Image: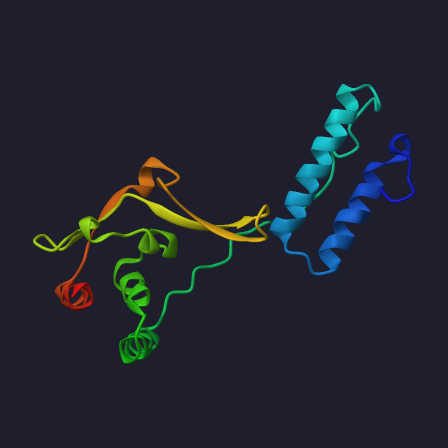
Length: 169
């Protein structure tokens, strides 16, 4: 912690540091991540007998809170639909709007995942764009969903069916 020697770090120093991160505008969730990393380092110092006790024990962290989910109003939804239908390449917007699917799930869809007879979409894969440090760019990975509950079958309305059939041609 700056110029403070490991053996001299106190709970007060850490609390002041954490409060300072929050005061600088760092999100509560980010402050919590930083603290977890620091706490793990302090635990390691204790296990290596560099410290007798972990000074992180009484730290009060900011609320990590989850941001509220703001659903579109009916007016906003209609405007989004109007804008998406007016241009090309907005199919993902319409699929997301009518199914609630995530962008990675939509990006990994194939026509085989869409059952036009029963108006169902099968979520079986997800696409991720990750940094490729070796090539100084990004690479795309198509993988299985992260959890068993991410595999799902999503019904869709006839209106979306008509659009999907238009896009398929």
